[in-house]
Image (cartoon, rainbow, N blue to C red; front, side, top):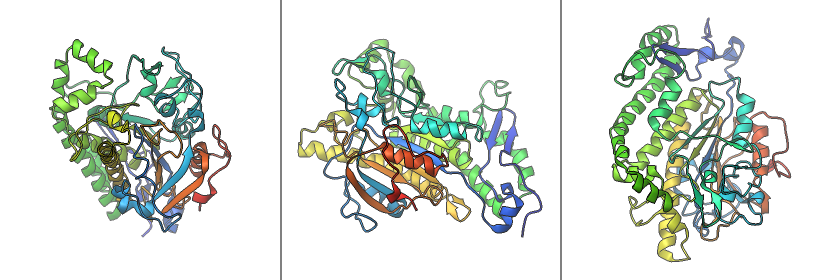
Amino acid sequence: MIKKWQISRRKMLKGMGAAIALPFLEAMSPLTLAAQGNPQFPVRSAFIFMPNGVHPDRWTPQAIGTHFELSPTLQPLRKLKDDILVLGQMMNKNSIFQGADGHYAKDANLFTSMPITKTAGDNINAGGISIDQLIANHYKNETLFPSLEYGLDRIATGVDINVGFTRLYASSISWKNATTPLSKEIDPRLAFDRLFRSFVTGNTKTDNPHKSSILDAVMDDARSLKNNLGRSDQDKLEEYLESIRSIEKRISNQDSLKDFESKVTPDIRKELNRVNISIEEFVDAHAGVNITEKTRLMYDIMALALWSDASRVISFMYGNSVSNRNFSFLDGVTGAHHSLSHHMNNESNLDQYDKITMWHLEQYAYFCEKLKSIKEGDRTLLDNSLIMFASGLRDGNRHSPRDLPVIVAGKGGGRIKTGQNLIFEDNTPLANLYATWLQTVGIETNKFADSTRTLHEIMV
């Protein structure tokens, strides 16, 4: 049956101190499209950064094209094999220039594809706007947030005396322009509240806005809406609200562990900065925070943001550049990420280094599988997205930016041909992928930074 009424795409559930953006519902489609069974969905974009590179010999799959076999490192993606692209021989060419060795010149500009300015001060410059922000500008009048930036570590400070770079470059991958990095939200509670508690005034009228569920505030509005929805939309709405409820409960469990940070003395903070360990890493390790659960909470919040179309562009940093997070919670790992990335070809170090990469891919797979479970018309949310996983280095031991580890999941609304392992010409500009990405999301251009062409090989 064709519905006899429709609601605005920007309809929100509202209550005192709360506003919840809704997922796509059939009742939001124009009547003509509903009759045709062909609602149009926007392409969402997410850019996922992992520091410190990968085991160089265990990343690349065997065979080219659609009949490839996942490599040992990529095994966490086995359920997504038909939904991903593995792209070989991509290079961020502008990450190599005189006097810029190390991580910062290869990570800070991973999504600008322009050379950064070497400095030990605050006059940072990443060469230009990042790909995510270019897309955000395109969508800025269509969503609640032009973009969302998330991560696990707060802004790094000081100077890395080993390479003469300010650590400010370690902390950002999203650049509004060449000199303006965007800060990331690292607290699941604050990330959640920003999505649902910041649009309606009144949330200061209670001493503790978290005593009750956000859903309690909008329940009357939700019941009223449900009464006017068809069965399919009712089920979609209930699934969405249940996801919110589940995340709230898990965030509450994380909140109880946050008091530890107040006990970290200035001397400890100074020493952590000296050895390049973030306060988050230290607190998480000593307060009993489960970093896997924290990461998945952030991913679930990201899924809500894309699902509800609160934003169509998200970036996420597993860690700052040169992150030395300790991964001893993994079986077979007894050290920290950056230290193990300088493996010196030691087999034990290489094996542990690879296990850390696989942990990152397991979380990435969790996010992509979550998106794949959400239906949108005849496709899934993953089908209507492009989700990139990349590191600015191939191998942390050599700081090599050639043949970067790059994966893209999602079909871009049916415009991208996934289920392929592709090896391009040596040193193919990474910006070629970004130029293709821009066209996929509807931005008419064939150029980004130092791109030389679009990747027709991945396009339908």
